[in-house]
Picture 1: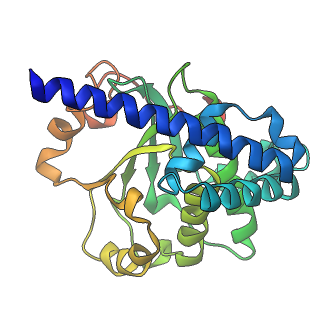
Picture 2: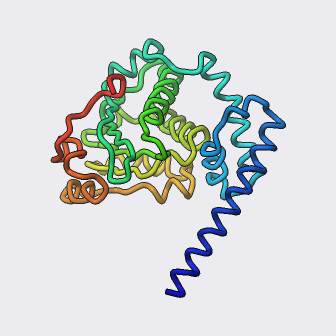
Length: 246
């Protein structure tokens, strides 16, 4: 009982420290960029957590994000008409929620085909998708989980620049949004690309990545997702819905 009481006390103290730092960070960011007054505390907290509660580093990251967002999305959003080639590949789906209420996404790595001039459109596709995913989150939830299915992936699918661009957008512009990433049906050849990308993944994100053996896919996913919310391609009940139709 004493241990539990001490743990609760530590948790309350940590929450108070975090809450105080959110207030201090808000004042600093608003002073530098008045448009940030429209941000809620949850966003400020996500950026703060992404930098281990370091107000200086978190403020710099958030201010950089605000400038990037204005430049990258002058209209405030990315429309489907801006990413026709990416959507035509039919590689990203969203359907259901895990046991914590986090939206579930499924991405098929072998459906990604690099093409001339694809990097900028791919970046828009990543942002379009993340905006859709975040908008689908129920109240009080800030994260999503993803299943990356790498079955059939080969060198024709390898696109290191695109992978690094997606990672940069996720970590720097949507920090603390990814809850967990399951990698399934991973062929050995994929590990050549993985070894290149891995050093660029921050320590917080690395802890969220799980490689799943083929024989354990359904049982592993059921640890986080109820069967009635699990995509039917993995033995669940829900059909996949393309991201643009979700």
